[in-house]
Amino acid sequence: MKAFPIIIACFLFISSCSDAPKIKKEPAGRIVLAEFFTFARCIFCPYAEEGLDSLSKEFGDSLAIIAYHRRVLGDTLSPAYTAVRESLYTIQTSPIVVFDGLHKVQTEKPEDDYPTYKNYILSERGRTTPLKLSIESNVNLYSVHLKITIIPVDSLGSGDFRLFLVLTEDSVYFRQIGAPDSIFYFVARRMIPDEQGIPVNPVYPDSIVKEIDFNLQSNWQINKLGIVGFVQDMETKEVLQAYLVKRIEIHQ
Image (cartoon, rainbow, N blue to C red):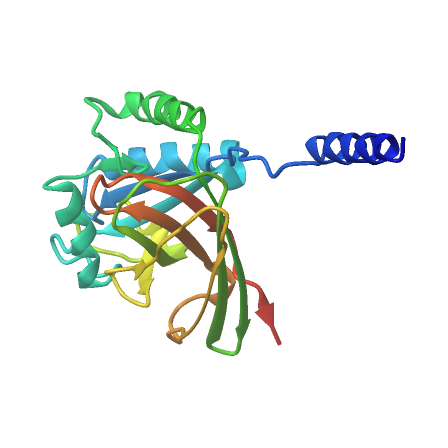
């Protein structure tokens, strides 16, 4: 008779364990990356930039935009080494926008820019992603500190995963004879620490934390600077997740 309460106790223990909460793999919300390839004297690029600017206001932090100014006809706004992004996507003309590394988009006429870009953004936002990404930033004088956290929320297959960080600047004045515009937005100013990115190996459920320091140039408008971060699989070119810091935080 003494065995009976022991059996009951074991049954209750097993039942309580089976009801214990389990860690679930939950999809993360996707922040779409738009990589815009442009140059100052490009005739149709202002229309593309205007479309992206409207979509930036519409989608807010759910859309991260980088404008790489190609070294064409004297444009020097972006560093020469950003040409590595041109090579990655085989960019030979402008304007072209690449969404999440997968969709290289060139419209036939300017009025198609906004609706075409929006359709790609909505399509990408509908896809799940296995990563969460966050960036904390602060500036002390001309020194910037970044803390980047990558959180896998699902298992990833094999790949050549890189973390890219791009410093962008808005309201950049650059005047050239023959250029249709002189104020530019989302301008890529620097890739941190370089154009090759930082190799990462996201493995569910372990988080990855990176901390990076770098300096700003005195001719950049500190109150117009932002950071775009993204994780890309260099084997497929797919951008798994992006993150936007609209304005870096300034500490006096």
